[in-house]
Image 1 (cartoon, rainbow, N blue to C red):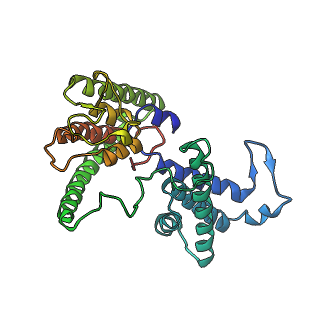
Image 2 (image 1 turned 180 degrees about the vertical axis):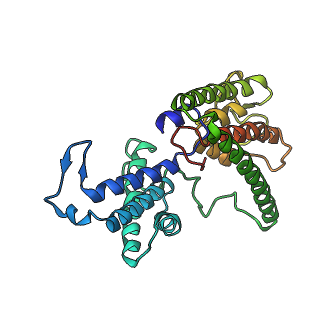
Length: 306
């Protein structure tokens, strides 16, 4: 998973975390490991070596994976209620909730030191691996009623795009299952070819636009202060003091790219030269969706939440 994300594939890493949590839960319920050569038959773990307890531990592990990925313990419980458990009983409710709460807390503690300053260990202000910011009372970017129709339109457009994505990906999966990419060596070659293709496109698309999408890093020409997003911007081949919009979106992690789009300051008028050009989002979105469709189903651990 680390190499898949680091290789530039447009994949989600949250799905495999749920899988990894379920694997850890299944192994923990048995209290032994043939790989590491230990057995705890003498301990209390022996009482958990049955199918019922193993299923419950798998559900708890999946809930812990959701909680660690999204900082949502209750979301992990609801996920298991809907998808992760074949049979639900009252004892499983508190077990999954306890596992999800513990996982979210431990993840929060580690993130406080990894993403914060040197003395920020224990400052539990971030939740989960993916967070888009808070809802402070003085936040000037509050939603208003007149924006709701726009949100509805975006939701409908996303539904149509999702339906097309599923249609194309289903056809590609059937093509793979018909023997075109069936052997192990062919699956390895497919991963390598797609990786090279995606990396070349990620470099080639911003490069082909030249300096058209270069924007000032400084607050020049009456533009808002961009210091809040300076850590996400990428200069690429732009002159000093400027950053390339497409390169910034392509070369950042999906989380940082979304943060950049959310926190990029803008002027009130959408046509202002200070704002991100809508064409840049279109130039990024079309190939990125195509890459996602090609990648989902190849021989790498990945999820769909990007």
